Each structure stands twice: as structure tokens, then as C-alpha cells.
View (tube, rainbow, N blue to C red):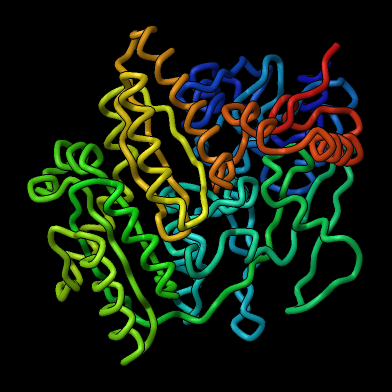
Amino acid sequence: MLIDDLRQELPDGRMVEDPGVAAGFVHDEAEWAPYGTPRVVVRPRTAEEVRSVVRACVRHGVPLVTRGAGTGLSGGANAVEGCVVLSTEAMNTIHEIDPVERLAVVGPGVVNDDLRAACAEHGLWYPPDPASAPWSTIGGNVATNAGGLCCVKYGVTRDYVLGLEVVTGTGELVRLGRRTAKGVAGYDLAGLMVGSEGTLGVITEVTVRLRPQREAERTVAGYFSSVVAAGRAVAAIGAAGLTPSALELIDRHCLAAVDKWKNMGLSVDADVVLLGRTDAPGPAGAQEAERMLACFEEAGATWAAQSTDQEEADALFSARRLAYPALERLGPVLTEDVCVPKAAVPEMLARIERAATRHDTLIANIAHAGDGNLHPLLITQPGDTAARERAQAAFHEIIADAIELGGTVTGEHGVGLLKRDGLEQELTPAVLDLHRSVKAALDPHGILNPGKVVKPITG
């Protein structure tokens, strides 16, 4: 039996025997995504232990679902019925930070902020910074190709992954990618793994590119009377050729939720706050901040200013990171993650507002506005089935609108379970078949996170 095999293969303490403890590993933060009951949860500490788990699953034909910290928002790490859940949380060693090559080698369970802090001791910086950075892990960030606040200028996780150690769907332990600054030998299989959500392999080690520590940022804040007006400011910044180091939107619903939770007093003066930052050095940074401020004012900001108080500026960005957990306190949240061209941000925000009215659904908005990555958050009350159905209708309408405007169904959270229908709208049948062919080649037994990302062909 599978459990007996795992007991023989793994050291003591690797299997979670307590059902109460195991229950904490069966789903991510996508509250509306379905999940099943696993046969067992395992917490390996080495790549060899991971390989033993994968091979046992292959022998017994049992699905394997890999998870990091469980901070995902698409159901990608949710257990399927009768699976093995493999948690990488114990693989949390920073193996190497090389200041000369500007790279780090880490286990998949290393927390994003812990890596950033360790790099800072060497004068280096790991840019990808999802809002969940204090809790999310590098392995999970790689699996979903996570983005974050500064990615408008510095790119997403994929831009920093040099190499990976991976256990394949056949139980082989392989190294993909490289450590060198350049390299084009063979297909980019490491890049293929980034964003694959555990459907193509189990990541056991990550080599990431680092940058030098950057200059201190200047912050520009603007208050707007509507999300559409704030969206016009975003489009104006893009049209002006500016590349801020962050450009974030928070609407009145988010501000009120954060205030109710943390009493920060942010929702008194603004319906929408737009936060811009520049890290350009010296006079160039001052000029970029002034031009950003002008864009805010020309787009109709009711108030806008460059912050001279770093503590105040950091508090505003802290509110942005707190918005999602604050809204969760109000009721079940269905999270969107659409991304549209910057020029389409005002129209997309207007369509989100119309969807909220049409479907009588409370929709709060936070956004990595600078790169068009919008996070409408659809909120209902617990147990209100009719409200949930209306919210789901709004959810699908927003996806369709994003695609119509030349966008994509997910900018950084991944497809998981919640966006599979959207993926089928976005991609042509021929491209979906390519996805299935890649899946079949790398996971021939079909055990790795089955049913996620691309729907299997039935019938």
C-alpha cells in the first residue's frame, strides 16, 4: 500500500498523521475553489525524499499535489480527492548567496522576505515582491510566476529564475537552466516550469538572479473621486514614458476595511488612492516624481503630493498589502487577477464598476495599476447562496471583458481551478492542445496536480 511504502521510504516525522493538522494543508486562500481529502500529507526535507514520494505515487497511480505556504488565490494547491499533498515548507534553507555572480540558491520553502533580508546583508536585492511576501515561499512564487508591487519596473519571478532542480513526473531528479549570466543550450525547460503550478514537476531547489540594492524611493500619493479617474492617471503615466518602481491603486472599500481593522484613518479623505514610487537616483528621481505628480493632477486628482515623510509613505504601502486580509474579514472573497494593457486600465475599471452594479455585488479594487494588473475582489456574506451566484456571474463577466480589451485572465495568481474556463476563452484550441501535449510528455502518468490549469479532455 502507498502509506506503507512511504513509511519505509521516508524518515520519521515526515508524514502528517494527525487529521487535524493535515486539514491545514488541503487548500490555499482561494475560498471558493473546491478541494478534496488527501490520503496523506508529507513534509520532505531533501530532494531525494521528494523523489521517493513521487516514485511511490507513480507506482500506486496516486495523484500528487505540491504546495508551498498555501497563500495562492486560484486553488492551484488544493488537494484532489485521495491524493498525496507534498508540502515544501521544511525545505527552507538558503544554500548560497554569491555576491560576485549575483545569484542565490535556495530551497523552495524559503520565505520571500527572508531571502530578501539575507540578500540585503550582501548589498543585493531580490525584486519579485508579491503582497504575500512576508509569508509566501520562493517555490510557490516560481510555481505561479508571482509578481508584486515593484514588478512594473523590475519584472516578475520568471525574469529572475536562472535554474531549477526538479523531480519529474517519472521520478527523475534533474537540473534545468544554468548559473551563468547567459546561456541558450537547448530548450528553456526551466522557464517552462515557471508558472506551471506543480503540473509538470516538483521544484526542489531554485537558483535566482539578484540585483544590487537600489536607491531609496520617492513616493507620490494622489486622491481621486473614482477608480476611473485614477485609471486615467495610470494611462497618463504610461503615455508620458515613465516607468515607476511601483504604481498601486486602492479603492474606498479597501481603505475602509483596512481602517476598520487597523484604525489607520485612510478612508476619511479619499475614495481612491493611487500610490506611485520612483527609485531613479538623484535629480532624475526628483524629476520623475514631479512628472508623476503632474500626471496625477492632470488626470483630476482631488489632492496629490510628493511625500516628505518616509514613515507616512511606508504606512500607505502597508495599507496596500493589508487590503486583501482586511477584506477577508468582511466575508468570503472571490479574487480576480486580470491584466490589461495600460491604456485600457480606465475602461477596464469602468467595466468592473458596471459589473458590480449589474450583478448587485460588492466589488473592491486593488491593483498593480502600473502594469495593468487589476485585482477586483468580489465580497459576499457567508451562507448567502444567491449573492454567491451573482458574484460568480460578475467574475466571469470581468474575465470576458479583460480578454475583449486585449488582456489576460491572470497576471500573477495562476490559473489553478478558478481560471480554467477563462483560459479556454483566452487560448485557441490548437494552443490548448500544445499545453496538453507538454503535460503528457513531462507527466506521462498524469499524477502531478491533475485537473489544474488545463482541463483534461473527457468523453
